Structures are given as C-alpha cells and as structure tokens.
Length: 361
Image (cartoon, rainbow, N blue to C red; front, side, top):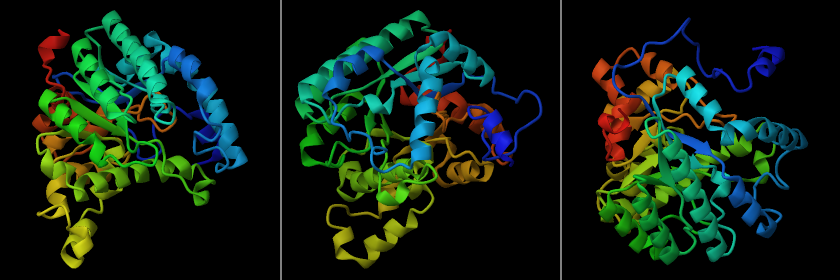
C-alpha cells in the first residue's frame, strides 16, 4: 500500500483484509457493538489538573512522530468521541443497530486519589446514562468504577446497576496491581452475584522498546490484556468465580492464539499450578472475545477455537485502531452458519447484557 493511500483513509476500512464491493450482507436479527467509547469532557476538567505528568505511557517513551500523530488524531476524534449524531450515522454505515457505550480508557483515572476517581466515575456514568436516554432504541451503557478502592468500586458498581447498566468496563490493571489482587475478591463476588458483564480494556503495557511505529498500542495494548488474563487464570479468579462474565477487547489478545503455552507451563512447572487444579485453557474458555482482529482467518480461528457463543462484535469506535465494517467482517467468514453470524453480530452481546431484541424495538 502506498503512503498516499494510507493518508486518504486514516479512519476508514481496515488495511488488515480485503473488503467486499458494495454493501455487506447482515443478519435479520439485531446487531450490537460491545466495544466502543465515549468521552465525558466534564470528567477531564475535574481530574486533569491532578494527573501526574507521566500518567500516560507515551510520555517519555513514544517517538516524536508518534506523539505528533497522537496529538493530531486526538484533535480529529474529539467530535466523534462526544457527538451522538455522528456516532449514530457511523453506526448506520457499519450496519450496527445498537452500541454499548463505555468511557474512553484514558478516563479510568486509577492513578488519582480514590475519592476524586469516584467523583469522576459518577460524572462519567451519569453522562453515559443520560446519553442512552436520548436514543434508548440504539444505545445502552457500560459503567466505570474507581477500581483502586474496593469499597468505592462496589458502591459505584451498585449505582451503575441501578442506573440500568448491564455491564461495566475496567482496565487491565490498577496501577501496579493486577486484577487478581486479593483485595478485589469482594468486587468479583459482587459482579458475579449481579450477573453483570465486565469488559476488560487495556491502557498499554509499555516499554522503552515500544517507542517506534506505534508499538505502544500495536503491541502494548494486547500485551496489557494478555498479562491480565494470565493473572486471572493462574491466580484462580476464574476458578473461584465460574459464572463471572469477562469480555476481552482485541480478540482476547495474545493468549487467545497461543494458549497451549500456558498448559505446557502448568504441566512442566510447580510454580504454574499453585492456585488452579485444571489446565489454564479450561478457564480461558470461560472468557468472551470481541471480533477486533481485522483479518478473516484470525476471526475464523477465534470462532472455531472458542465457539460462536463466545465471540461478539467490538469496533473500538472512534479510535484510530477501530474496525468500521464489523458485520462485513463476520460475513467474510464463509465457514460459519447464519445462526452463528446472528449470535456473533448481536445475540451474544444481548445475552451477556441480560437484554433482548424486544428491549430495542
């Protein structure tokens, strides 16, 4: 692909695969996007004066070109992140009937004071709830919680439930803590009791080696999720909460394609089986995966490996790494049935959220 071709479509069809001519087929059933983001400016106004200078991994790591590109793309995406009419128009183009709105991952704010984060989470969740009310037949909401404090996280989780949210979005880690931290046990217990969906989204696992070529995102984001998944499995969270529902961004990241390495370690080393009593892949199959893998053969692998019941559309709209043709992508997988396509394109998402098509009629 030539440089000028890339510049002409920075927020268009992915270069990860070829696309169909004309409009794609779509299922007769409802189509749902479980992975997309909105930004709440009021939360930024509240928190940004209190953010540490190095709160984002691009500071001091990213190349000058990456930082400049990030700045330009941030300006480009400001309106799509906040304008609901633009979002609805894009949903129509993408053949999506419903979007489950979640906050921008940069608004988790786990690095600030717990009370400030709790206040910002309340502002964000109120904004998402109010936005959903403007278009209840096209939108639903996923909340955010101040995960750096367990009691406050549970309190906001319960408020999210009262707001009508059927799910929440969390980061892949909380500062230097993993999602398997012992203090989070009451939180996972409550999530399982409420039967609420937990969408895990990364914020980057960064290294000085990731400064060039947008590797902070290309490698860093799925790596962040990868580490989280391994801790949830190896530290026994999935074993202790077999009914908990985790939905993973970016196709489940690296373990989704290289899971047997976990099983090998479990069989070969005593330090890889201290807290679980079955092979790690047994617990990996409890997760749900978004479709954001870009290539047709990779999506086909994900479906065959984990089942059509465990895959649901995610676009990452309106980010630069977004998928703008998610339904087309599913229909390019020729080996699956129409029933499978209906599940992946929307019915699985509705089931995970304890909703039905009638809720959007």
